[in-house]
Length: 364
Image (cartoon, rainbow, N blue to C red; front, top):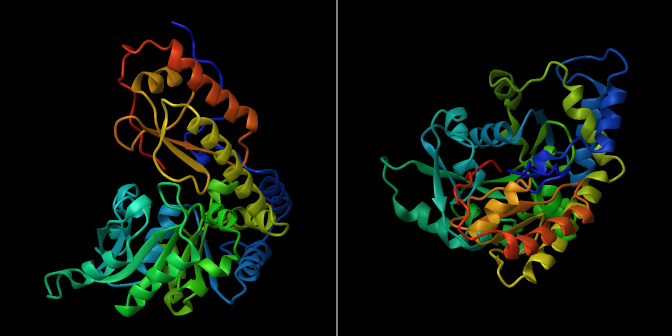
C-alpha cells in the first residue's frame, strides 16, 4: 500500500495552522526581559486598550487560555445555577464543550433552539421562554449565538439585532461565541461594534487561536456589570496565567496594524475559491452557504476515503457524505487547487467499493 503523501497544509481546522508572523514577533519581544505577572504587565494592558479601541467603547477585557473557558465562564457570569442558556442546536457550547458551560455555572442548563443554516430563529427564543413558566423548569436567562456559526454562515447586523430584540423582550442576556469573529467581520465588512454592543451583545468571546495566535481568547464585556468579580472566576477555574503576557502579547501583534482582519479576509478568500472549484464538480453538493472560512460539501463516500488515503485531513460530521473544509490564515491558493484537483481525479480513479470506514471526527 502506498504511503500517504505529505501535505503541508490541511482543511481539517484552522486550529491546525501555526502562529502567524505578527503574533510570533510579539511573543519574541515579550520574552526579552522580566515583567510583572498575573496580568499586571504592560503587554496585557496594551492588548486590552487595543481591544477597546477596536470596539470603540470602554469594555472590560480578560484573557483566558481557550474558547471553552471563555464561553463557559462568560455564560456563568450571566445567571444562577437554576437558569438556562438558549443556543442553536449545532452550537459549540452544546455539542463540543463536554458540558463545560453547565460545569462552570454550577448547573445552568443548555437548551437548544432550531434555525436554518446554523442560525437561531428569533421566534424560537420566544417559544422556549413561553414553553413553561413553573418553578420546575430551568428559567431561560441568556441567549448564546456563534459568529461565524458552526456551519460557516454569518449573522448579519439585522439578524443579531432581531435576536437581541427577542432577548430584551424577555429579559435575557446576549452572549456571542466569537471563535471566528474575525472571519465574520471580514465577511460583513462592518465595524466590529456594529455586530456586538451596538446590536445588543452583552459579552463577546473573541477568538484569537483560529486567527493566528498560539493560545488565548479574550472575554470582552460590553455590559460591564457582568464583569463583576470575573477575575475571581478566572482564577478559580485555572485561567489566570502567571505569565499572562504570553497570552496577551500576540493580541498586540495582531491588532496594532490590522493583521487580525487581513488574515481573516485571506482565509475567507481561500474558502471562496474552494467553494467555487467544488461547486463546479457535478458529483459534489454544497451543503450550506459559504460566508466565512469554511466550505461544507457532500462527497461520495469512496472519494472521502480515497482523499484521506492520499494524505488529506478534514472532518466529517454532517451526516453521510457531509464534510467540512476549513481554511486558515496560511492556506495558499496552491493548497486549494491541489485539493480540488484530487477530488476530480479520485472521482474517476478511486474504486467505489473501497472501505467506507473513515473516522468521524467532531473537533471544531
